[in-house]
Image 1 (cartoon, rainbow, N blue to C red):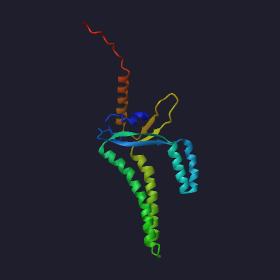
Image 2: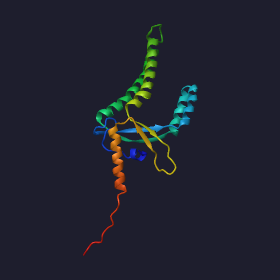
Image 3: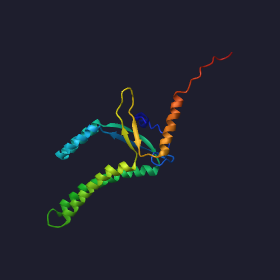
Image 4: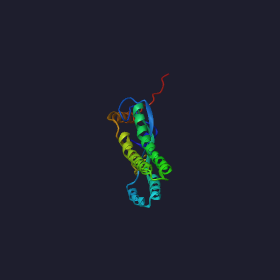
Length: 191
């Protein structure tokens, strides 16, 4: 599909995840970085500064397409949970570290190492959930760069229901037929 089709929400009311009739629309942003950005992984050796620099460059040069896809309410809830649960787990890690330093930093109690290790587990679990769970649950998209002679970016959406794909194809064929239908010349009115 085209990025403009995604931006204009030009889809039939068929849930992208289940193929059932859609009840709501949910905003998705698909982003695809160029292949050369994987060389920026070397910046991870600089620590947190390298991560920030690499993330900023990747964000700046990525091809993006944003729009709404039709979903059922339960599918929208599942997509929302797959996004927010890893973020909440990630935010629990600094909380565990603060509590670890506050509660166990003064004495030799086992509270400090337990809470510190728990914070590390929260961070790793949240990052893995964000990288894997979010990608496996909802629709994924690959945005291709603008090609010579085209006025719009091509977006390849995957991890969607076959009924949604069929509905989109029928919708596109109907739009094409409507746009390029032969025009009948106007007949002069008889007096």
